[in-house]
Amino acid sequence: MKSDRRDFVLTAGKLLVLTAPAAAYLEAVETGKAEEPAYKNNEHYWGMIVDVEKCIGCGNCVRACKTENDVPLEPYFFRTWVERYHVAEAKEHPDVDSPDGGYNGFPEKYAAGDGAKSFFVPKLCNACAHSPCTQVCPVGATFESPDGAVLVDKTYCLGCRYCVQACPYGCRFIDPRTNTVDKCNLCYHRITKGLTTACCESCPTGARQLVDLKDPKDPVHEFLRTHKIQVLKPQLATGAKVFYNGLDGSVR
Amino acid sequence: MNRFVKDKEHLFRMAALFAAGVVLFLIFKAVLVPEGFGVYGHYRAGALADNRVRAPRFAGRAACVECHTDERDAWKGGKHAGVGCEACHGALAKHAADPSAEKPVKPDPRTICFTCHLANAAKPRKFPQMDPKNHFDGGACNGCHSPHAPDKEPKK
Image (cartoon, rainbow over all chains, first blue to last red):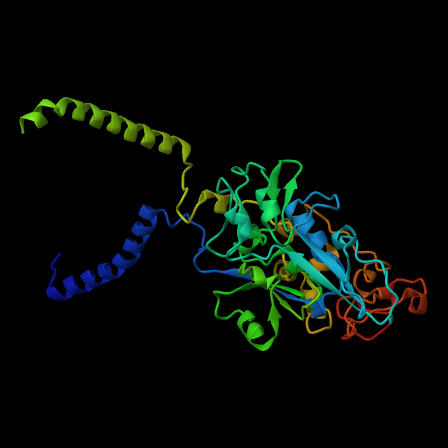
């Protein structure tokens, strides 16, 4: 076959086009990137918005959390729970109750129009950026992940309970089945798959919203700009990333 | 110079002891420190993956409306459009993965609505709530109200 310069250039050009995907494929195979999941923990920074003014105390979040995360059903193990505040004007301290953590909702306890204000406050791990609980762990079994969740390494936890005492928000408990600590991990198995947390998924009023602070398109930025936001116990400088809207001063 | 040469044997002995100590330390470190420790911080990097292995039990509303298009059309734009499917129907990831594996149970229309709409002094004022004593005639709520879009579809 006779080949002139024109044919050669055409063939070479076609082959040249193929080199880029071939190189990319080889690189992916060699570095093992082809098998790695798409989630990158340096591209996210998780937190949550809790809108107290929207919470109706239905307990959907508590039930969903227990279902999703296999939390023991006994009413003293919670990754998330809801509290009812009843703040009377003349009293120094508010009345707070949380029957079964809100698992079965809140039976009416106070008379409507009794002159006090009453509201629900959902609580969960505050996903602190400088969390006191991780600092006290003697073995490095709990830590702040690069994407802003506070996680537990269950294979490493000794069950020493230091972190249970250190958490200023009371968000940790010892799982009686494993004798290791358990806590809200912001549904880490869900958020890394592109789903929202179980509590946010089942919240009927949108009082809870998972937010990605590193995502510029996340509505959280607009929300934080346009609302009066508070975190729990700001004086402790824990860097909490659960942002409460409409939080009353009586909430501790 | 002479003195140094004369004393060099004990220097070698100490150096050998020191080197043995370093080797022992490195061996202990290799055995005791788990893989991936210190990659991101003072913890095992593999713990991140361990926290991800659990399979979700809530499929998420996006998965539901892939098949249930009639319900999606009824639900969208209504007052309950912000309520996820599984808020009332329960966790259905198994059903979403394989519709024949798990059949969802229909929520009881006489009780499910009270999960949210039962009157309570602590609920926000604007939230629609009712006391069954004044409103409820004993029938099912969906006899009058459409559960998927209570405002969009007319009352029966």
